[in-house]
Amino acid sequence: MGPLVPEVIGNELNFVVALFVGIAFGFILEQAGFSTSKKLVGLFYGYDFTVLRVFFTAGVTAMIGVVALNHFGLIDISLVYVNPTFLWSALVGGLIMGLGFVVGGYCPGTSVCAAAIGKIDAMIFVGGSFLGVLVFAEGYPLFEGLYKAANWGSPRIFETLGMSQSLFAFLLTAIAVGAFWAVTLIENKVNGKPNPEFSSKKLYYGLTAIALVIGLAAFVMPDRKEAMLNQVKDKNYIANYPVKMITSDELAFRLIDDDKDLQLIDLRSPKEFDAMSLPKSNRFGLENIFEKDVHNILSIKHKRNIFLANDEAAAMKGAILAKELGYENVSVLKGGLDQFKTDILNFTMPSQTAGRSQADTFRFRTKAKELIPILIQQNKLTKNSGEQKKSKRVVGGC
Image (tube, rainbow, N blue to C red; front, side):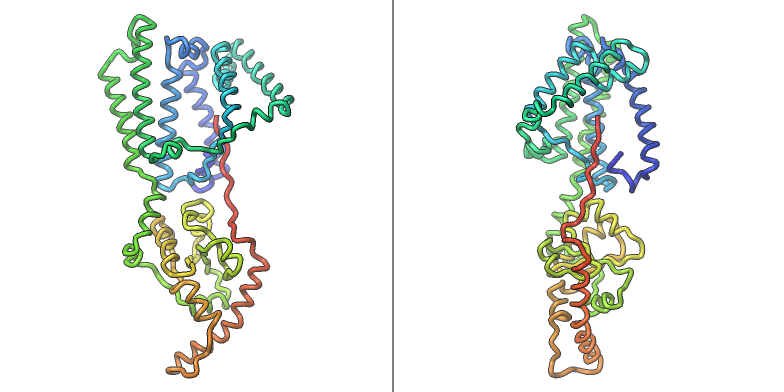
């Protein structure tokens, strides 16, 4: 539930939802027969592949669900924790886990489910699990070298294979469907008779069609972030996109006036931001606009969000992305910070003025040239580095 908290699901409601999800999960495991060791080990002997069907279905459903939620901006995919891969400990652990599964007839999750309904063998299995955890914890100094060997980081298969997320989602769905057909044939041969649950070929064809349609749906939901970032690379698209502008003079006035509704989104590098940043500034990279941290800032009511960068075009990219994501009160500093420095910070009074209005503007700029650097220095003393704080990734899972 983590990536949906707190925007979609409140912190308090999260625990309530987790409770009901846990109850439903245990109920489904029991109804699927996962509290019976004979059904579980049937996977290894070839007479019952319920485990494979359930886990493949769960994986494909979760995969398409995450793709869909990310596409519609309901979760921040960058906050979904991906377990790091330590190759040798994964291989050794997998061997121990598989051996325990075959011998004991349970995995850690299903053993708890079976123990909850009074299965003695499952209770013994749970006790053995606790014993194994204790041995590993007490002997960790001996196992640490193996445990941390061959750290591969947190790879994602579609990136490793060099393919799009949508293509991988479809291929995995197709592999799952193929596996369902293959294990049904194996079951029929081992048991010497067709599985009564899949005796109707029309039912199997229908389920296959539904699964492939769900897999194809991943192509309808391409990576939203990548598509939008590619869109703002088009200079013509940027030039014709309507965005409100704020002049250097107006921004300087609002800063001096300490406008409480003003909020600046600085898209420059951390180094540039640390060297000189205006008051009320938050530094984020262009890609960070899709993340929860920026959402928490841009979604504050009654705030005017001013995007700025060294040049106007770079700031326009951020403002367009924000507007396309549904944020309101978005504006861009006209001419960028380069123009602001020319008009305000480095202003030089010309020898002649054309009219009273221009004379008033020049007097204001002269005053702002004195005041704004003071505000910048005060802001530098109180503000943290340009490296924005990141929300913690959500850790969890089976």
